Length: 104
Length: 104
DNA sequence: CAATAAAATTGCAATTTTTCGATATAGCGA
DNA sequence: TCGCTATATCGAAAAATTGCAATTTTATTG
Image (cartoon, rainbow over all chains, first blue to last red; front, top):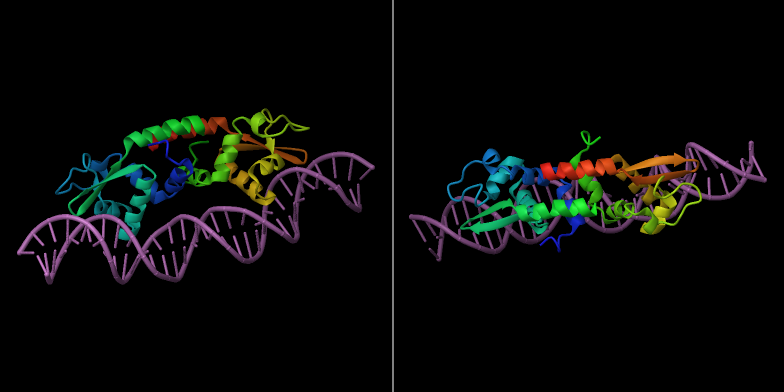
């Protein structure tokens, strides 16, 4: 829900090069992440481990960053077995762009 | 120039409630700031003192925030006599919105 | 149930940001 | 030139963020 989307918080989350890169890499998951045994990177999302390799930070930091992207409403998380798959929340991102066009 | 606009830096600048509020208040300067003896708030911009009263922070902090908004390309500064008048850089803000629509 | 694997959480040191008061600078008028 | 006013800049203390290693939680499998 964009109604509850705090613009300042969204800006804070995106004001970090790694978090912004994660969101941008998730635009074309097949281009930036390896195929997964279970779960398609485009349909289901990308697991934390793959994202971590991409950004080159620790597992804990990567997990924390993904959680903050999720809190900001920019990605969704789907737990499947031992893995958590993250993908962009395109609906909210679209609403965000529209909101910025009006409020900024 | 949006070409040189660093998106992460722009997000950092806007990820602060006061700085975002300043930018938003400058959308309708006549509504948020008192008339000025010299320089029209809409045409020339709003002086630092008026902006400071609006945000309720110290003079130095307000000045620093305005400088960072300017570095991010979001406002322009025009010095007239002893006053500096700040106004939105609508061209760059528009380009920013377009850029976000493409890159986010 | 024990071992393993993926992810989340915790605790912490280092760095950055926030915000202020004090000081410096620039422009005006007496 | 000497103040006075408006801004800008500097230096510092407090708060927030960054990012890691270690630990805990969750889920799978033997």
